[in-house]
Length: 233
Length: 233
DNA sequence: CTCGTTTTGTTCTCGACTTCACAAACTCCT
DNA sequence: AGGAGTTTGTGAAGTCGAGAACAAAACGAG
Image: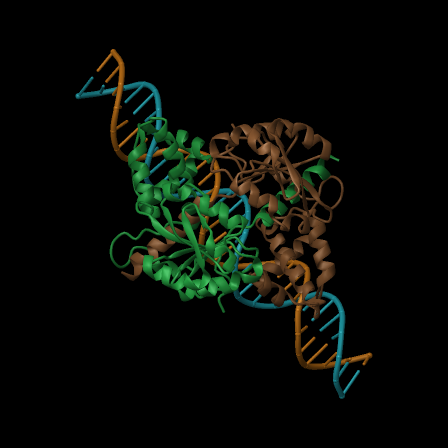
């Protein structure tokens, strides 16, 4: 029945090292923090800092140092006791583990307000991604071009995806259209979807979906805000 | 030292019902799902559905029905055994618990591409929020107006916040400016921040920060995508 | 009124993640 | 070379959340 794949399906974890080599199982919570560490390391490197302790890196990433060390230990032993971590080396190792040493081609569907913002987002290229296609079902939009990339009709999804070997798609359409877009993406061979539409997507096993939802984030803040107000009252 | 307040500080939980009345402690994981249930209920109501079982609502929200029932049980006993839940009644109860029966005033700082998109986002009003101020430090932007709201200079933050009693602020500026904006928000009495800038914010205890980060989400997808590729190879 | 059916609310168990605490390993100084 | 001082990597304990399973409660039929 496939309840909902917000988290990765994870096929019983293969009972750890089994087939080829290491194939370390990295906990999902750790995976979600690796990009934060990567960004902190890039920032340190920009400041010409060559070495850092787990304490310093943890501070830059906004986490507890014990957690940082445990997270890094899943990748291997890349630090030196008594010294700390080599910034460039660790940075490369994390980038390699995440898989962003080379660029991933990405398509964005839905070039409304949000789609525009995403297409113009400069962090794509610098963080391991490259926008290879902008798509919109509205013919009126198929004439413009955003950030130097032409907006093409939605029906071109499959050809663009195959041409560039796209595995990751971004959905920035209204909620009502989101499921249709997701279905088309899956049909086009896309297996990872980042969904900005406020809708629950149903996809086959093997396809990952992550959701980003402004209203939900605000409502969570509102809940805590309300509690603060009640508590001080 | 205040590690980082991505999650709420939670003052030792006061050992459950202590002072005034119920003051039920709702787990953070449940709080994060309540908005999803709320949206699913609104959708059911739009379809003229008056009653639903936990199974149906769970399907609409994309979760497991046992989890849904347990989540709802933290709010109270709002269902009827053998029957299910009254859609409108449950919807109101969840909205009340989250605190979105009335609108929260919100300010958005940074009216670039993303800020534009956020300001135009129609879901604000319908989901318990009202944009009362758009701010940008660039004087060139202080002449436009977005979605009918004038863009005002950043220095007006404090007066706008006080005038409307703003508790929630949205940061949509570049990473380098994010901490300064956060500091100004805190100084203006804002105690909940939604941060779209790819930066780690440091704020005093009692201020909640939630982060939304496109690059991180994509990198998490990339990690899993890479593993799929390795596994099938 | 009683019995069978449906569906909630809750208890219990299990797994995952966080945090602590410390041994192992490295550097530097004498 | 040896000892003092750091800092990593990890075992172990504690906390939190997920899911299964079931008792309690409501409804409807006869």
